[in-house]
Length: 79
Length: 386
Image (cartoon, rainbow over all chains, first blue to last red; front, side):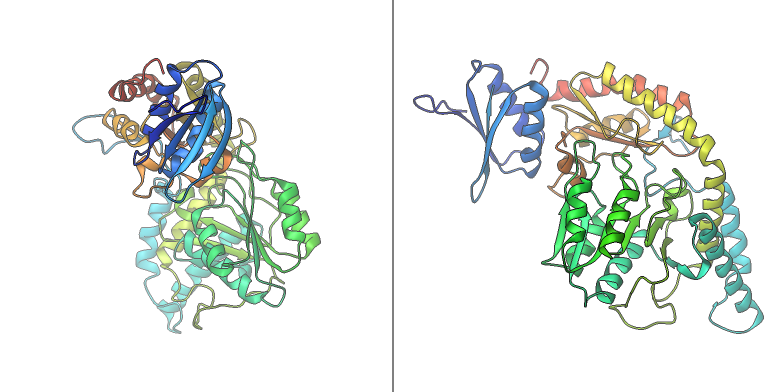
């Protein structure tokens, strides 16, 4: 994970990880994030695309959006 | 159900009977009897062959009686998948002048979705479902009412999450659009009342306690069908089926149907118990599917931060056979398309499809083992407190 500059979302790189690892890595980042902070998880596992929104719903975080890049998917949540 | 063939003295409880239920004793007896009485080729004309033909016709007649169909409307397939493929392909071909479209829900079984993609590569319309897995009737209705639709397909109930589908409403919509509806009752026959509203109906003998290797397809008169495969004496399922398996399948459905109401009360109560106790005793769990409008014997839940394969393996080591729709439990990377379409957690998934005869003792033993099995898998991933 790396903090982006100037209010941009924190990036959680979960590319190459399989379920449930991307959600776990995102949850670890969310635990140390301030309320209102945005986190963007990068993932290649097809399950993550379904599980990140489900996790956000279960934890009461807001889903901001999903962007499909050629080789991975970027999902942004607000904690 | 407790498996008496336990190994190393461990008590085994198998709670994953979807599409592969234990063979009912009556079905086993019928199978063995038919091996002696029905070995000959039913297409030939000598006495033994006529006897085999009689047994096969008797099996079709018995199945038709349960399904609410006429005998000549019922054909037997070598599997449920073959029944579904044959239905979709033959109707798509038979109604090709109307158009190429095939409409399905998003949560049909893979055999239906793949047959639709095969028969209608550019014209397969998928209607979404809500969070319980119930199809959006408005979207389905709009899709079948569009021009150029050859066939609509909707399951009676979902075999992964148990949710019953609004088959009557969707059939009414399909009928007013002049589109035949194939109802996939593969997860429900023998467990729930046979749906009355269909133009084609498919079922799976292995799911209701019959032998593997028999699928059933009933088609109402007037549904236009044409094979898109070579001609054969057995027009709809070339080569025919095993007669002992056919007879055994018919006996199994009669037995399952006779016990259905009593079994449903018991199993539905056990599923209520699983739903309540899993939600109360396992932290961070989602029990999914409709809590009431459902099959009596199916329940599914997903545990956050849990690897589905690790959990299935851990429960197996503790004596319990369960299923899972998580991607981590299959060779494919994709998780269950049913859980995905519902928007629920796909990882850490456990699916129970209770076989006939499952007892409270079986289910309580599972419920006693589950929380610590989940905790153990989570502890290996070091996710406590997340």
